Image 1 (cartoon, chains in turn orange, yellow):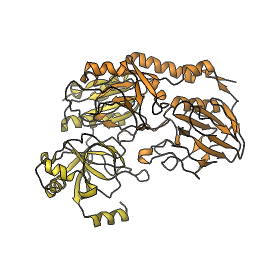
Image 2 (cartoon, chains in turn blue, red):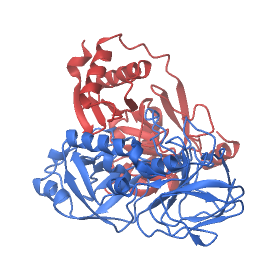
Image 3 (cartoon, rainbow over the protein chains, first blue to last red):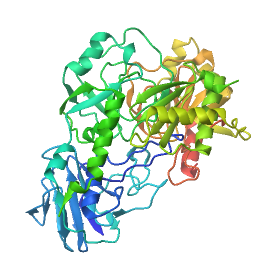
Image 4 (cartoon, rainbow over the protein chains, first blue to last red):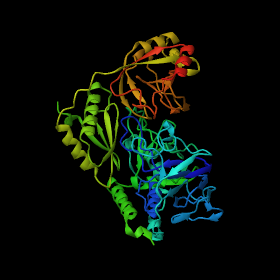
Length: 310
Length: 232
């Protein structure tokens, strides 16, 4: 079991999400940086979608009541185990009574605490992931609070392993995000389309797992257009009447009525999960074929035998 | 009628295909959406992981490691030309009690003025009509209900509220809906229901389902409080 001594800013239980319930308005949710989650689970010998803790910006403190193994992945939160520094990206033994502290991020937005056997919460609609907005799944459908006690699955010592630095570098989060054209790209003024890719964008404080609001040039339509509400793709860059774009993210609205100027490609969505308020990002347009090639390449790296070293 | 004639296939993202049956809300195009969604649930496409139905389109999210847009398109066409959609069961009739105006409906007054009506007219017109739940989307349990009578049609707010409380009843254009959870929203709010529209610990989780016939019943603050205390 894990006792939550301090919950952090927003720590939730996440797996690879709950697909298939779009028809009742439930988006997939799941880890904001699934690449980090999958690597953590591989380090521990867990199945790839095993539930872990996702910490956001400020990580909290967690006490373990039994010997086990953990792997911290994603951003560096300056973690310590009984005040000894713990580095990310390797399998790490933990002894009964030890306290894991994760003060705050030194790099991106999210750090994953993966644990041998996973976090044991009841599956809701087939998934352990928390959908914060609707109070669905995870630990009581909400971010963790002080005093919560989390059950964990059966521990199995991994063959102590760490990451191949070369492969890890190829999977590192990006600040220059690849996008494909949006369904309504040509509704926008050519100057606005040029501005999307020609200048940096700043992530605002009003960003969460539902969407990231960006600040930069005002994006404008060529003329008034009314859109009929339709399904929204994960990673869609929507432009509401304010002209400031929003990247639709994991706890997304399943349908919407704002024009979409571009879409972040699937391979770069995990990078979006590491963006913090005030981070600066850029966009680069690629074809759907290139986007698919990027995803296949990422998948090969994640599954490759070279990813881990003894 | 051959549905494949009306469908167009659009690449919504590198892992999503939008099947569109036109760009206007019509009962006919909506029937085509439901028929396709039904067919895809009955005989799923292996690489398709999620469906987002709407008025006249269906977004299919797929695993781009396992399939391309062309693969999904081919499989959709195959299902369209197969067995026709099954008739839906008898629609359920659902009544939603609403306390209109005041803090619960901060836009009621402005909407009435905009349409040259009294507040009571707006309440009467909204609660006299019967609505159909076209589809669920946006957030869990949010049912898009149509069609709002023209007399009380209202545009979205120019700048959306950062937080709309759960149970709020809104109008946008000729659609109306109840917000199931607290979320940002741009619809004009005219009242609030004490019912829980979505609960993760209930079966079914969503109070409203596809094709339900929905009516709103005006209630007082007292009745609102009574229902709220008694639970849904």
